[in-house]
Every structure is written in C-alpha cells, then in structure tokens.
Length: 481
Image (cartoon, rainbow, N blue to C red):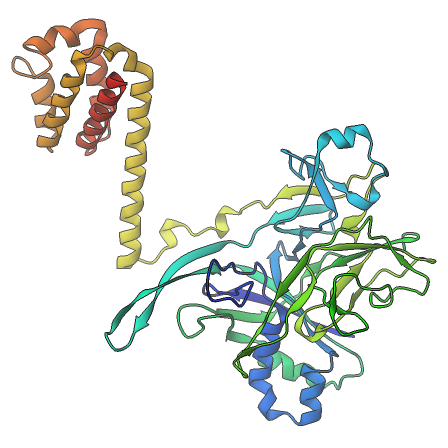
C-alpha cells in the first residue's frame, strides 16, 4: 500500500457544517472530512478519465482520502480518545486513566475521584511520550441574505456561519492499494496540490485552502501485540450495516476484521455516535441518513490470539475517509494502576509564530482596528483604577452629603475637556470647587482632598475627564447603596 501525505493550510475561514440543516444553530466540524479532498480530485479528473479508472479511484474503495486533522509540532493530531478519563474538577494533565485498564469493580479511591470522560479537542501523541492538547479555533459571523430586486439586505433573513479560522494547519493522507496502477499516483497528486476551494460559501469569502506534500508523524501503534485484549481506536467516523442493510451501532467482530472466535467487550468499550443526512448537490436532494460511531470511540475485544498492530479501514464509505481505525494504539497503553503512559500538556505557543504589530501591513483597516484596540485598553485601565479607588477609599465618603458633591464634580468634569482647566476648577485656590465654601471643610477631613488629587495626578494624560466622570458616578452609587 502506498500512502501520500499532505498538509492543508487554511488561507481563509472555511465553513463545514456538522449537519445539512439550514435552520437553527449550525456548528462547524473541527476537522476536514476526506470527502472534500475526494471532491477536489473528482472535479479535476472525473471528466478526463475512462470509466474503469474513474471507478477505481473514486468508487472501488482502493483509494481512500483520509480526514484532515490539526498538525501540531509536525504531528497529526487525533480526536480525544473516549476511553480516557480524568477526575472531575481536575484535568488530564494532572491525572488521566485508561478506562479498560482499570480493575473492575473500581476501588473506593477511584469512585471518590468521580472520573469524567475526555471528550473534546485533539491531541498530538508524539514519539517522545507527550500528549499535546490542541483546539481548532473557530469564528462566528452573522450574515444577511441579499434582495436582488431592491438591491439591499433581505428582511427577516439573518443567519450565522461558524467557521474554522484562517491560518490553521492540518494534515491528511491518501492511501492507495498495491494493485492500483502506478499512473494513478501522479494524477491524484497533480489534482490535489495548489490552492483549492472547499466547504460552503466558496464563491464568497470562505473556503480557500492551500495543499502541498508534507511528511509528518502520526500517533503510532504498539511495538508488539499486547495479549488477548485488543483496543480498536476510531481515527475516522465508522459506519456499519447489519445483514438487513440497516445502519447499526454494534458492529460484529468480522466487520472489525478480528480473528474468528473474537468477542467484543461492550462493557469495556467507550462509544459515541453521530447521525446526519448528506446533501447531494448533483441531484439537489438528501441522501440516506449516515449513522455510525463517532471519531474517538474505542472498542475493546477479547481475541483468541494476539493481533498484529496496524492501521486499517473498516465499514462503509472508506473512500471518503470513513472507517479508519488503529489497532492497539500506543496512546491507549496504561500502567499497572490504569494511568496512561503519556504526559499531557498544553501546546506552547511560539511568540515568533504570532502576528506582531510591526509585521502588520499599514492599511486603513489595520489602523482603524489598532485605534479601537487602544481605546478599549484605555477604557479597561480607567475601570480598573476607578474600581480600586472605590474599593479602597469608598468608606471615607459614606456621608449622604457627598452624593451631591460627587454630582457636582461629575458636572464640572463633563464641562471641561482640557485637563489643566479641570484641575483648576477643582483644586486651585481660592475659587476651586473643593477648596472653598462649604465643600472645603468636608474634603479636608480624613485626607479626602489629597486622595482625589492623587487620583487625578496619577491618571494618564488625556484620560482625566473620562476617569473623573466614571469615578463620580460610581462613588455616588456607593453612597446611595
């Protein structure tokens, strides 16, 4: 079998809805299904190929376009294995167990920990024994349908798109059986490599990706067979049909390519399911529902003899990326107490990989966003200093008379944008509001005047008016409360 490996970089956001429904909340997938790459290849080659070659590549199952997962530290991630558990209110980095490796029944210590299933995210299980957590970053945008007659937004037609963020790097494989002609390899590679479009709204702002050949590491299998218990990890979504032709969530040992006499231990297995109806664009209709085992599921079987460690495809729709499994994956190994042999940690973000302000292009949009960012940072600084003043010194202004005092200070601050004039109106002898008349004696007590003056002096240049308006409003609320 020949395996072609590729890297897929998202040049724009891409929309890959988890379901075909057009109403209600739609979530995007956190991976790229293999049928997208099959479609890219078919759009390029199908019309040019003879019937036999087209059937061989796209329908025979001898050429399998795998799902694209996140690429982290040059390692293709896998969905969080459902067989991994960690203590409630804890994390997998602190303590992680492999379910089928735990002694049955559980000890009182394990029951007290209230183990919780690891369900979300992807992990790069490296050859160094690290399990690096990674997440597919997403963005949500609200759109409006377009009214061509009125040339404006259509009424009552708002909708939203959740999309994978541009910049994500993913990796996928194309597996080709040995009996497929050698001429197929360059044809597939030529059709895949380059800038391509996939997902929804490809003619708008979404769906542009760049595909290129790339060698990467994959989470491997054990070095040798591991006894009578065999673990089968679903690296792809699995779809099986029973003898009557209906979808089933309980595949047989034969369907899983296990030796004769094998018994599936459903009590030790961890299964998650999915169901959706794919939309057939060519026929403008829905295909039959696809129901199966979700990516990340773990099936445990008892076999009469040790089974070779390997990757394989099982079930239906293997040509579209469904059906990929890993027998006895190394990341499901456990110690004698049931704990995983891998060390979980978060992905270390390299500062050099992050977009730096000095590297951003000087465009009107970037300048506008930068200005808004600075305004938000200034507002945050004002709120922090005001809250600190209220919390630390609010008790010194509890007298009811100060409510009107703060109201007057707020009025003066709103009327004077110039900071020099504002300071004079409040503190300059002999006519400053706080240093003469009835207010003078009240503010002289308990160092109130010096506290407010220090607040004004320490406020950044250009922010004094906003800071005083906010402080006066908050202090008045504190007194009334």
